[in-house]
Image (tube, rainbow, N blue to C red; front, top):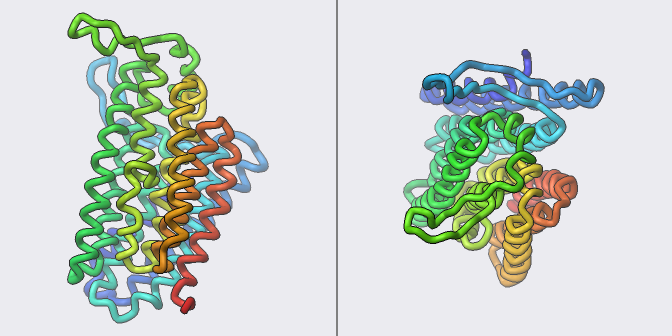
Length: 363
């Protein structure tokens, strides 16, 4: 299928720029812009096809792992209505950010490196939303973490940028441990990592429990869906900068402005709400997890909104605004309003991209 080019083109652009950047110089920007722009056009085509046909598109890639008859991991791409909406956001804002960066980064000593990492960052988010497998999703989740570190520390001669990048990487690494546990528990419960198979069988686990203290002779029964959802939510807390993992995002303003626009508008912070919406069928089975998600999201939205009012630096004010808005999205997911969360995400993504790219004109 031609839609495999949506994630493949940014990856190829990143590889080409990384290998030939010294010879390409500032022409590296043209390769990145062309790749992201073509991916955006294909995303529009996928959106139109799904709108007309109404059938999801499944693209099998290859069998990554097989161990006996029980463990089989097939990687592939899956496009449904949720996927194409996120693709329009990621590739649309990503394209504008790449075009903006071509002039913004002119004269930078690490110009090719910047565009190589930006293309890889875009590839990570695009592939994450298209993944049909939790293992593939987790790998892209980590690719974005590594790219955020490289982009935030782009001006590595500044100590503040290096410290901000280290904080972002470490905070997200801690939260990602929770996501990894959630994936392991998901496989232990459903016997598969295929997202659509998991969602098709969530109702069969609605009444199942684990005794977490059985190994020491006590009883503490926790619903399986609750534990899985809370661990997956821990990963969302890191990427989406929610309390108590919110501390990295304001410091990430040490990155160049196009990086801030990409992180806050199209990638990274949107991964958390996307994961909750993707697993909405699982989340809805656990009232306890939904209550936790709603409380954390609401608390973060209120806290970050108040802190944003105290900021004098316009980029930090926008950073706390992002934390607050993502908090509202998380809260609406906890309340079961998943459609509203996606609408909010799309509106916020395009608006915040515009706000970051126009901050240079503000006095």
